[in-house]
Image 1: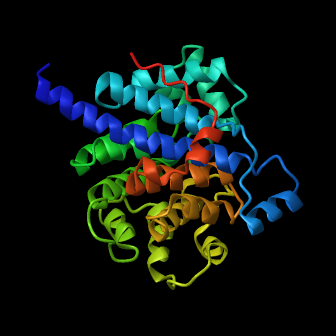
Image 2: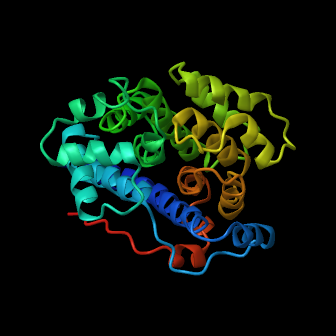
Length: 308
Protein backbone atom coordinates (compact mmCIF):
# COMPACT_ATOMS: atom_id res chain seq x y z
CA UNK A 1 0.00 0.00 0.00
CA UNK A 2 1.48 3.35 -0.96
CA UNK A 3 1.44 6.41 1.26
CA UNK A 4 -1.10 8.27 -0.89
CA UNK A 5 -3.61 5.41 -0.66
CA UNK A 6 -3.11 5.16 3.10
CA UNK A 7 -3.55 8.91 3.50
CA UNK A 8 -6.76 8.83 1.46
CA UNK A 9 -8.11 5.95 3.54
CA UNK A 10 -7.20 7.73 6.77
CA UNK A 11 -9.04 10.87 5.69
CA UNK A 12 -12.10 8.86 4.71
CA UNK A 13 -12.02 6.98 7.99
CA UNK A 14 -11.81 10.21 9.98
CA UNK A 15 -15.01 11.38 8.29
CA UNK A 16 -16.70 8.09 9.12
CA UNK A 17 -15.58 8.37 12.74
CA UNK A 18 -16.91 11.93 12.94
CA UNK A 19 -20.28 10.69 11.71
CA UNK A 20 -20.11 7.82 14.19
CA UNK A 21 -19.56 10.24 17.06
CA UNK A 22 -22.56 12.26 15.91
CA UNK A 23 -24.59 9.06 15.61
CA UNK A 24 -23.64 7.63 18.99
CA UNK A 25 -24.14 10.85 20.95
CA UNK A 26 -27.50 11.34 19.26
CA UNK A 27 -28.50 7.74 19.92
CA UNK A 28 -27.58 7.95 23.61
CA UNK A 29 -29.25 11.36 23.97
CA UNK A 30 -32.50 10.11 22.46
CA UNK A 31 -32.38 6.86 24.43
CA UNK A 32 -32.21 8.80 27.70
CA UNK A 33 -35.74 10.10 27.12
CA UNK A 34 -37.29 6.63 26.96
CA UNK A 35 -36.95 5.60 30.58
CA UNK A 36 -38.37 8.65 32.33
CA UNK A 37 -41.95 9.67 32.95
CA UNK A 38 -43.80 11.69 30.35
CA UNK A 39 -43.80 14.63 32.75
CA UNK A 40 -40.01 14.49 33.15
CA UNK A 41 -39.50 14.19 29.40
CA UNK A 42 -41.75 17.18 28.76
CA UNK A 43 -39.91 19.22 31.41
CA UNK A 44 -36.55 18.38 29.87
CA UNK A 45 -37.77 19.42 26.45
CA UNK A 46 -39.41 22.62 27.60
CA UNK A 47 -36.43 23.73 29.68
CA UNK A 48 -33.73 22.24 27.43
CA UNK A 49 -32.38 20.35 30.43
CA UNK A 50 -29.91 17.76 29.22
CA UNK A 51 -30.29 14.32 30.81
CA UNK A 52 -27.91 13.40 33.63
CA UNK A 53 -24.97 11.21 32.57
CA UNK A 54 -24.06 8.58 31.73
CA UNK A 55 -25.97 8.25 28.47
CA UNK A 56 -26.11 4.65 27.31
CA UNK A 57 -26.20 3.91 23.60
CA UNK A 58 -28.31 1.28 21.87
CA UNK A 59 -28.04 -1.22 19.03
CA UNK A 60 -28.02 1.78 16.67
CA UNK A 61 -24.52 2.63 17.85
CA UNK A 62 -23.36 -0.97 18.16
CA UNK A 63 -24.21 -1.54 14.50
CA UNK A 64 -22.75 1.82 13.50
CA UNK A 65 -19.49 0.82 15.15
CA UNK A 66 -19.52 -2.50 13.27
CA UNK A 67 -20.06 -0.68 9.97
CA UNK A 68 -17.15 1.66 10.71
CA UNK A 69 -14.91 -1.26 11.69
CA UNK A 70 -15.78 -2.86 8.36
CA UNK A 71 -14.76 0.29 6.50
CA UNK A 72 -11.54 0.48 8.50
CA UNK A 73 -10.63 -3.16 7.87
CA UNK A 74 -11.87 -3.70 4.31
CA UNK A 75 -12.18 -0.16 2.89
CA UNK A 76 -15.59 -1.36 1.75
CA UNK A 77 -18.73 -3.00 3.04
CA UNK A 78 -18.21 -6.75 2.98
CA UNK A 79 -21.64 -8.21 3.83
CA UNK A 80 -20.39 -11.62 4.97
CA UNK A 81 -17.93 -10.07 7.41
CA UNK A 82 -20.46 -7.47 8.54
CA UNK A 83 -23.14 -10.08 9.20
CA UNK A 84 -20.78 -12.05 11.44
CA UNK A 85 -19.78 -8.86 13.25
CA UNK A 86 -23.41 -7.91 13.84
CA UNK A 87 -24.17 -11.39 15.17
CA UNK A 88 -21.08 -11.41 17.39
CA UNK A 89 -21.98 -8.06 18.95
CA UNK A 90 -25.58 -9.14 19.45
CA UNK A 91 -24.46 -12.30 21.25
CA UNK A 92 -22.09 -10.26 23.42
CA UNK A 93 -24.67 -7.65 24.45
CA UNK A 94 -28.19 -8.74 23.47
CA UNK A 95 -29.88 -6.15 25.69
CA UNK A 96 -28.89 -3.06 23.72
CA UNK A 97 -32.43 -2.44 22.51
CA UNK A 98 -32.59 -4.69 19.47
CA UNK A 99 -36.06 -5.10 18.00
CA UNK A 100 -37.70 -8.48 17.79
CA UNK A 101 -37.08 -8.95 14.08
CA UNK A 102 -33.42 -7.99 14.40
CA UNK A 103 -33.01 -10.38 17.31
CA UNK A 104 -34.33 -13.27 15.26
CA UNK A 105 -32.14 -12.47 12.26
CA UNK A 106 -28.94 -11.96 14.26
CA UNK A 107 -29.49 -15.03 16.38
CA UNK A 108 -30.00 -17.10 13.24
CA UNK A 109 -26.81 -15.71 11.68
CA UNK A 110 -24.94 -16.51 14.87
CA UNK A 111 -26.21 -20.09 14.64
CA UNK A 112 -24.81 -20.43 11.13
CA UNK A 113 -27.75 -19.47 8.93
CA UNK A 114 -26.63 -17.51 5.86
CA UNK A 115 -27.54 -13.84 6.22
CA UNK A 116 -29.46 -13.84 2.93
CA UNK A 117 -31.70 -16.60 4.24
CA UNK A 118 -32.06 -15.12 7.73
CA UNK A 119 -32.95 -11.65 6.43
CA UNK A 120 -35.06 -12.91 3.55
CA UNK A 121 -37.46 -15.13 5.43
CA UNK A 122 -38.95 -12.54 7.81
CA UNK A 123 -42.37 -11.00 7.19
CA UNK A 124 -43.50 -13.96 5.10
CA UNK A 125 -40.51 -13.68 2.82
CA UNK A 126 -40.90 -9.98 2.06
CA UNK A 127 -38.01 -8.97 4.31
CA UNK A 128 -37.81 -6.04 6.69
CA UNK A 129 -38.51 -2.48 5.60
CA UNK A 130 -37.49 -1.23 9.05
CA UNK A 131 -35.31 1.76 9.87
CA UNK A 132 -32.34 -0.29 11.09
CA UNK A 133 -30.43 -0.06 7.83
CA UNK A 134 -30.81 3.71 7.80
CA UNK A 135 -29.70 4.28 11.38
CA UNK A 136 -26.17 2.98 10.70
CA UNK A 137 -25.61 4.23 7.14
CA UNK A 138 -24.18 7.74 7.50
CA UNK A 139 -20.56 6.63 8.12
CA UNK A 140 -20.71 4.90 4.72
CA UNK A 141 -21.74 8.11 2.98
CA UNK A 142 -19.02 9.97 4.84
CA UNK A 143 -16.37 7.44 3.81
CA UNK A 144 -17.31 7.33 0.11
CA UNK A 145 -18.46 10.95 -0.11
CA UNK A 146 -16.70 11.70 -3.40
CA UNK A 147 -18.19 8.73 -5.29
CA UNK A 148 -21.99 8.55 -5.29
CA UNK A 149 -22.15 5.17 -6.96
CA UNK A 150 -19.98 3.73 -4.20
CA UNK A 151 -22.18 5.45 -1.61
CA UNK A 152 -25.30 3.84 -3.07
CA UNK A 153 -23.74 0.42 -3.62
CA UNK A 154 -22.17 0.07 -0.20
CA UNK A 155 -25.15 1.54 1.66
CA UNK A 156 -27.34 -1.07 -0.02
CA UNK A 157 -24.89 -3.84 0.89
CA UNK A 158 -24.85 -2.75 4.52
CA UNK A 159 -28.64 -2.84 4.72
CA UNK A 160 -29.12 -6.13 2.87
CA UNK A 161 -27.56 -8.06 5.73
CA UNK A 162 -30.69 -7.48 7.83
CA UNK A 163 -33.16 -5.76 5.48
CA UNK A 164 -33.96 -7.62 2.27
CA UNK A 165 -37.01 -5.44 1.56
CA UNK A 166 -36.17 -2.78 -1.02
CA UNK A 167 -37.54 0.08 1.05
CA UNK A 168 -35.40 -0.88 4.03
CA UNK A 169 -32.43 -0.55 1.69
CA UNK A 170 -33.71 2.73 0.27
CA UNK A 171 -33.66 4.22 3.76
CA UNK A 172 -30.00 3.33 4.15
CA UNK A 173 -29.18 4.77 0.73
CA UNK A 174 -31.02 8.00 1.56
CA UNK A 175 -29.08 8.55 4.78
CA UNK A 176 -25.75 7.68 3.16
CA UNK A 177 -26.45 10.11 0.30
CA UNK A 178 -27.36 12.82 2.80
CA UNK A 179 -24.06 12.19 4.60
CA UNK A 180 -22.12 12.51 1.35
CA UNK A 181 -23.91 15.79 0.66
CA UNK A 182 -23.06 17.10 4.13
CA UNK A 183 -19.38 16.36 3.54
CA UNK A 184 -19.40 18.09 0.16
CA UNK A 185 -21.17 21.18 1.51
CA UNK A 186 -19.28 21.64 4.75
CA UNK A 187 -16.83 24.25 3.50
CA UNK A 188 -19.32 26.17 1.36
CA UNK A 189 -21.70 28.96 2.24
CA UNK A 190 -25.01 27.92 3.79
CA UNK A 191 -26.93 26.13 1.01
CA UNK A 192 -30.48 26.76 -0.04
CA UNK A 193 -33.09 25.35 2.33
CA UNK A 194 -33.92 21.68 1.58
CA UNK A 195 -31.28 21.44 -1.17
CA UNK A 196 -29.98 18.28 0.48
CA UNK A 197 -33.36 16.61 0.10
CA UNK A 198 -33.50 17.48 -3.59
CA UNK A 199 -30.05 15.96 -4.00
CA UNK A 200 -31.04 12.75 -2.21
CA UNK A 201 -34.27 12.39 -4.19
CA UNK A 202 -32.38 12.77 -7.47
CA UNK A 203 -30.33 9.67 -6.63
CA UNK A 204 -32.82 7.57 -4.66
CA UNK A 205 -34.82 4.48 -5.71
CA UNK A 206 -38.51 5.37 -5.96
CA UNK A 207 -39.89 3.28 -3.12
CA UNK A 208 -42.18 4.37 -0.28
CA UNK A 209 -39.39 6.23 1.52
CA UNK A 210 -38.77 8.27 -1.65
CA UNK A 211 -42.40 9.34 -1.95
CA UNK A 212 -42.70 10.27 1.73
CA UNK A 213 -39.42 12.20 1.57
CA UNK A 214 -40.68 14.09 -1.46
CA UNK A 215 -43.42 15.56 0.73
CA UNK A 216 -40.73 17.39 2.69
CA UNK A 217 -40.20 19.72 -0.26
CA UNK A 218 -43.74 21.04 0.17
CA UNK A 219 -43.42 21.94 3.85
CA UNK A 220 -43.29 25.65 4.75
CA UNK A 221 -40.03 26.89 6.22
CA UNK A 222 -41.65 27.99 9.47
CA UNK A 223 -43.24 24.61 10.18
CA UNK A 224 -42.55 23.20 13.65
CA UNK A 225 -40.86 19.80 14.02
CA UNK A 226 -43.99 18.34 15.61
CA UNK A 227 -46.15 19.40 12.69
CA UNK A 228 -43.56 18.18 10.19
CA UNK A 229 -43.53 14.81 11.95
CA UNK A 230 -47.30 14.51 11.58
CA UNK A 231 -46.75 14.63 7.81
CA UNK A 232 -43.41 12.84 7.45
CA UNK A 233 -43.57 10.40 10.38
CA UNK A 234 -41.65 10.19 13.64
CA UNK A 235 -40.38 6.62 13.55
CA UNK A 236 -43.10 5.21 15.77
CA UNK A 237 -43.80 2.55 13.13
CA UNK A 238 -40.07 1.66 13.17
CA UNK A 239 -39.98 1.51 9.37
CA UNK A 240 -37.85 3.44 6.93
CA UNK A 241 -40.62 5.48 5.32
CA UNK A 242 -41.90 6.62 8.72
CA UNK A 243 -38.42 7.60 9.98
CA UNK A 244 -35.99 8.73 7.29
CA UNK A 245 -38.04 11.57 5.74
CA UNK A 246 -38.41 13.48 9.00
CA UNK A 247 -34.79 12.85 9.98
CA UNK A 248 -33.48 14.26 6.71
CA UNK A 249 -35.82 17.24 6.97
CA UNK A 250 -34.62 17.88 10.53
CA UNK A 251 -30.93 17.53 9.64
CA UNK A 252 -31.36 19.84 6.67
CA UNK A 253 -33.24 22.40 8.74
CA UNK A 254 -30.57 22.48 11.48
CA UNK A 255 -27.43 21.54 9.58
CA UNK A 256 -25.35 24.21 11.32
CA UNK A 257 -26.37 23.45 14.92
CA UNK A 258 -25.90 19.93 16.31
CA UNK A 259 -27.60 20.55 19.66
CA UNK A 260 -30.59 22.32 18.12
CA UNK A 261 -30.98 19.52 15.58
CA UNK A 262 -31.17 16.91 18.33
CA UNK A 263 -33.59 18.91 20.46
CA UNK A 264 -35.81 19.18 17.39
CA UNK A 265 -35.47 15.46 16.65
CA UNK A 266 -36.29 14.32 20.17
CA UNK A 267 -39.21 16.75 20.49
CA UNK A 268 -41.40 14.65 18.18
CA UNK A 269 -41.01 11.54 20.38
CA UNK A 270 -41.54 8.35 18.34
CA UNK A 271 -38.34 6.33 17.81
CA UNK A 272 -36.28 8.88 19.69
CA UNK A 273 -32.94 7.10 19.80
CA UNK A 274 -32.96 6.24 16.10
CA UNK A 275 -34.25 9.66 15.04
CA UNK A 276 -31.49 11.35 17.02
CA UNK A 277 -28.89 8.84 15.80
CA UNK A 278 -29.67 9.57 12.15
CA UNK A 279 -29.91 13.33 12.61
CA UNK A 280 -26.75 13.44 14.72
CA UNK A 281 -24.79 11.30 12.27
CA UNK A 282 -25.56 13.80 9.51
CA UNK A 283 -25.30 17.15 11.26
CA UNK A 284 -21.93 16.27 12.81
CA UNK A 285 -20.53 16.08 9.28
CA UNK A 286 -21.61 19.67 8.76
CA UNK A 287 -20.51 21.12 12.10
CA UNK A 288 -17.40 19.02 12.71
CA UNK A 289 -16.38 17.70 16.12
CA UNK A 290 -16.42 21.23 17.49
CA UNK A 291 -20.16 21.35 16.90
CA UNK A 292 -20.89 18.41 19.20
CA UNK A 293 -21.17 19.88 22.71
CA UNK A 294 -18.26 18.63 24.81
CA UNK A 295 -20.58 17.92 27.73
CA UNK A 296 -22.75 15.73 25.52
CA UNK A 297 -19.80 13.80 24.14
CA UNK A 298 -18.49 13.22 27.66
CA UNK A 299 -21.94 12.05 28.81
CA UNK A 300 -22.10 9.27 26.21
CA UNK A 301 -20.57 6.03 27.43
CA UNK A 302 -17.24 5.25 25.72
CA UNK A 303 -17.36 3.50 22.36
CA UNK A 304 -15.85 0.04 21.90
CA UNK A 305 -14.11 0.57 18.56
CA UNK A 306 -11.43 -2.14 18.78
CA UNK A 307 -9.72 -1.02 15.58
CA UNK A 308 -6.79 -3.16 14.54
